[in-house]
Image (tube, rainbow, N blue to C red; front, side):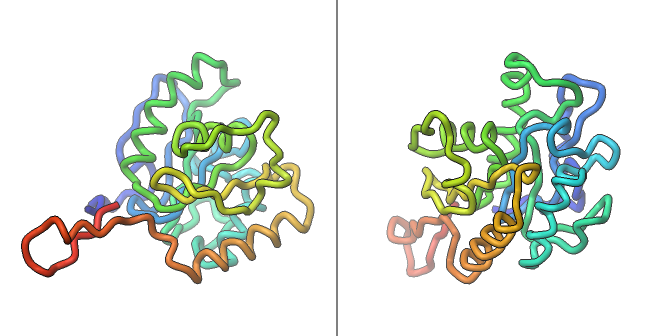
Length: 207
């Protein structure tokens, strides 16, 4: 099933309980879902597009290099098979209570997109993705240097953690670029063929 919408910004009309927020942005049928922490970390309050501060654009440039984005320096880049969002989409310094309140919006959007590959950025996003959307128990503390750009199989998702771009050296970008190029050259889809349960010989592929 595909989402039918021509909206790139906030395609599902999310309305969190705050005056200023950075909505999800990108292809509503994307196979790749990039997940950040909150606007105070990765930017976007001025552009209403996630990852549009200096560190975020460093990350987006890698996605542009592999063909998932057109211009990482644009305020409204055009994604191709890529969706961007935050765990906590509201402006201001998050609290445990506000993270918990924003989780329903993030979860609803993640499941609506139905991406095959989740790309959490930084420790908080990686911990939440591993804990909530895989059968893995996140180690404490998370060793992001070891997890960066590696493939972890989840419960219906492939997870590729990404170190916070604020902490990157030159090698972090190259590691991620190589990982994404390798991934794009394979069949990364997380699908099941249920045609054997249906009449006839037609395949029935579900996410």
